Length: 124
Image (cartoon, rainbow, N blue to C red; front, side, top):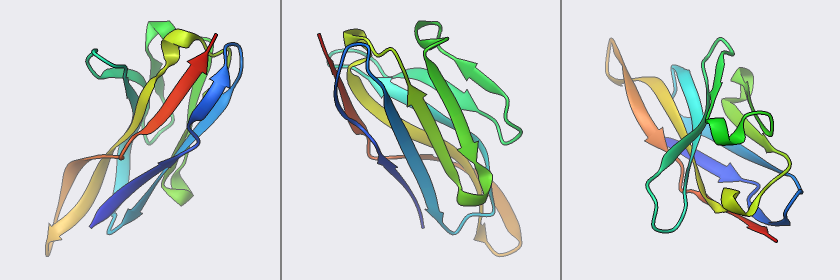
């Protein structure tokens, strides 16, 4: 089994900062891309940022220059540093990981996993 456990959400005033963490645990061979998505009430889930195993990153235009994604491969953990937060950043943030694992002896496959979500609320 594999689990993604997020932490670091909360309530912050506009202009403030939060740091989200997401740790993957379980039977993991390796992890390819890891990313953060968010879903605001009444809206579809959207990509916030993604980072490859080699460290290449990609960001949604709405967060460029304010958010930074990073990862610690030794800890199977991805982080999202969020600065200059705005009320429109309010959403449930979900961690995602493309995890290589062996569910059949001798075979390794890539599987998509999601965290349970953590609430980020930015007040005016």
